[in-house]
Amino acid sequence: MTDFIKILTRKNSLRKHCQEMQLADIDKVIADLNDIRAEVAEAAERNAENERAKLQQVEEIQRLMKEAGIGLDELKQGVEPVARKSVKAKYVITDSEGNEHSWSGRGRTPIAFREYMDKNNLTKEQLPTVD
Image 1 (tube, rainbow, N blue to C red):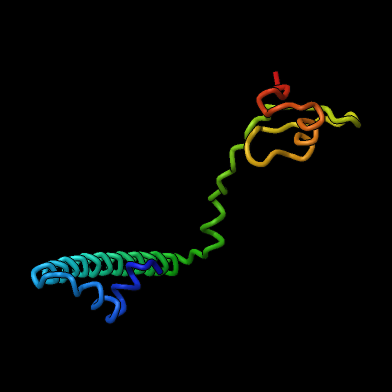
Image 2 (tube, rainbow, N blue to C red):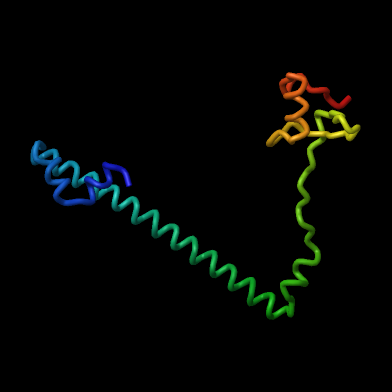
């Protein structure tokens, strides 16, 4: 919780900080807070309405599936999961045992590449690339 929120939510802290303010300034703050409250309430109502509409759609789909005698397993049969696109290897090295290691250059550096770069005092950009 930020200090500002602590001040706003604690009456004594708020009173202390408002002592130096003019009445007109306090009225302006109250008006602004009321406007913000109305905006937050409207957003919450919109979100609740969207959730209700989504729930109605789900119930309608479930009703239609039940009427048609379609189960969830049957519905899944025609749909293939989206395969992740594999990334081609960009770097290739051969370790001291003769094993070839490849790496796309993305994510964490594999141990074999870290050891190779440390041993040969290389940076990632200096690694041998796939032709």
